Image (cartoon, rainbow, N blue to C red; front, side, top):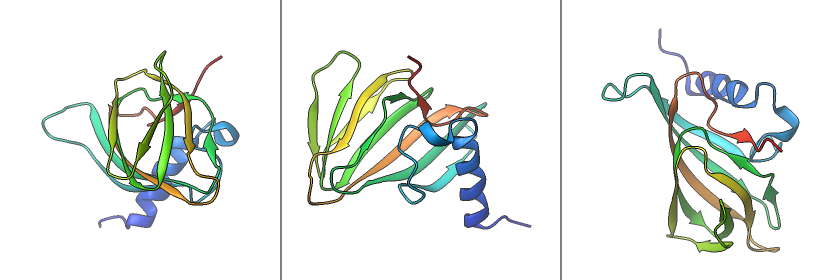
Length: 138
């Protein structure tokens, strides 16, 4: 029997949030992160590929975080301000994208607008059993 998308998304969300519920990297709003799919690629044993969206309400930001796997992010809607490692903050508008190597410190991730929503499409390749996102350890 094939599990439903809702069941898979629920399990992934629980796995992503386990032990970090109040401080998970992309906030604690229940609908802010939506897992679209998770696959175990046959050409990358021990890895899982995850595609998800991150929606930011006007003025919303995420706490500082990092990703144990590689991440590619694409701005679908609005504009997002991002700061990776020691680089300067950069504003990415709809249609722009960036890459984060495993372990990159993502100290700033926020909606650039106080009046319009923003949305990211995120793809990550991470070790099986690891979360896509971890709060930054201070």
